[in-house]
Length: 348
Image 1: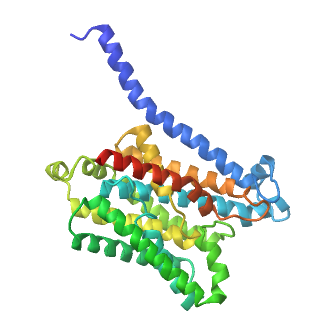
Image 2 (image 1 turned 60 degrees about the vertical axis):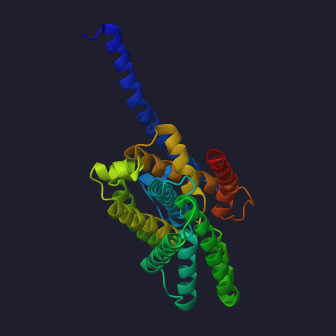
Image 3 (image 1 turned 90 degrees about the horizontal axis):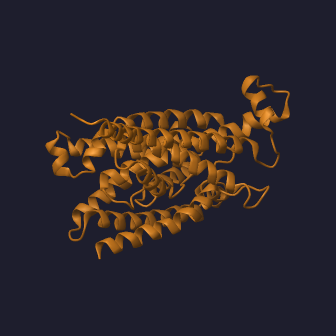
């Protein structure tokens, strides 16, 4: 019979196990609310919380602050939240499927492929927008993934995860060069697209928010159903197969989700790097390797990180706009180098 002290210890342990995820999600929710509020308040013109509350309760077209919120800041805030969540979840899925801590949509070239096809379509079909751009981003990301997987399968030798990462970096550089070439030969579109290529959420309109909500909503909802399968795959392919998982089916569905999330994000704000690289590592550090918890936490942390970066970007060259992609690059590039060095030490 279990003694009262042992029973108390076991209950304390169970309480600790369940309270940590609750604390992480609660803290993430509070931080997300704070940065979302700051995103609405901070800009060339300061908007107080009372004006924000008035807009939420009774939006009026005759009040200047309400007009600024409705036309500029609320669409931008919602866009940043959705894209941060999408990129965080996309990076989490990629790292689980490839079992590579360096994997992310930007490192593996998905952003570059989506950007190339979107720029190509924008130049030759100037009227394209909304779902058309999202479809172009999806097609470009998917073609890039197929190209990387095909080249990795054709090249033998070395570890598969490192090989795919190196091929992804090469493909990313190649497609980025092609994109720059398109801009050089189409100068009339260059000035507008260059700011977009740096990753900017400024000037997002409500119709883009609606399209993004549909694409990201479908992708995020589908991703949550993959949590158990991704947890089993992270234990190893043989064990996952022994537990009834269809590895290639999970990989196919996961890849399509990643491409949908990353492609739709690029279609609206351009390529924003390193969010999908950093966020899954923070989530795993907090909650371990259970992807049923990691995926929703990665969505929250991705939204927090990108919203924070968007708020910080407004102070770089105030009151002028600075692309949020520049801020995420400043944060993510040193972290990528740190991860690469840590991986090399483990393999040594």
